[in-house]
Length: 79
Image (cartoon, rainbow, N blue to C red):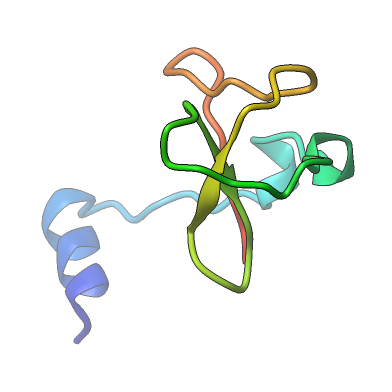
């Protein structure tokens, strides 16, 4: 039995409800958030995230078109 199965058995003895991901979240294509300036520098404040390479590619000085995640407006990044 996997750890997940053990936790479900322990914490949810009546089972769990499964929903399709698109019924609980909105998907947004990230193309409008792609930075133009690739001159990254650790002294800048805005991290540049990229799927398939490293999580934080670098930091940019750009301020327009930046998506700011928060507890009220979280973000999930899929690779």
